[in-house]
Image (cartoon, rainbow, N blue to C red; front, side, top):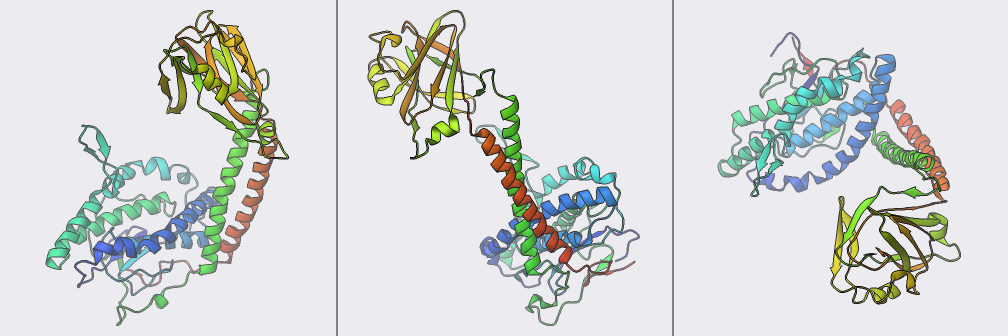
Length: 474
């Protein structure tokens, strides 16, 4: 088949004439090793795509070794998808290789671009491709909604491709034949998705056509000849310079890049917090949250603090803790910290609410019925730290080992309690933690770059042109 301007990405698949009726039921298990490997390969794909983005922006060229690797990941993914639930077009197990395998029934190649637009690289992968993303969402899932039993709309997990493949699988189970019209449509829809993937991955500046090219050879290429032995191993795969060792180096380097980026991001965020989020007294404070109790007291759940000898870890890490409590008006508040057992004795028989957690922004309580306390909280001899104040109070407490409970009450012990609470600490170790995170992240980044760049530039560059095993026509 000949067309004037074939799209630079070429996707083909040859439907096996004698598919097993029931093998598709267990292909999810058989394909599992491939999906595990692909999970790591796609991490490397993402990291190398960022490198390619920078290279295109600076030089207008897509580095050929990275291009070959990323095309190989797309090719591997297409073969596994074709074998499994993206098409179910073959029962022949996919080879573990990035290279083109001429005798395998599924093929993918991308014409290498000699030059790419420096300006388009800034917008094509998110803005220009947006209309296609909406279509792809419908094709692969998540782009349409179903109504559940409660009447709420929920995103559907299945896209059009998955539904069509399921229909074909059921027909295959009962008749032993894959409906050819469904196969042609499934192949055409996959072609659409993969063209968008190549465009979004910066491999071409040619905008994907809003055109459904149904099954059969991809416009502009002819399929390679099959070998006489359909079960021949993929030893005939075309070499790209990406050996197993180099692929492993890129994957490992990419994983280390993500880890290093996470460490640097955490260190930078903590550095910003350390320099800009402290109050006038040097405490890092949370945003206030409203807590209420219909009873006479608010109590925290048990707070366990354990210091490891010989270093007082909580004291070194947290320093002094602070609890700021405010209320409307001039109501006098009491805030105290006591050993959990003694606080429980004081609150025995007292109506109060224990804060057990916060889900989202909603406090969760355990409400205990009872009456007023027998004595005002400030008069009780159990607090290791306490304070009172009209309209609000701020309690500072040097963190110590033990089991502790924080209690907030009106100073006169009356009900109810309605306050806003913020907690914080001096965190003296924060500066050291920032330095450790940034140093570790920087070291890992250098190591990851060495692995990635060493593997990329060690890959042998193939001469420019379309993939071996596929021939352009027209």
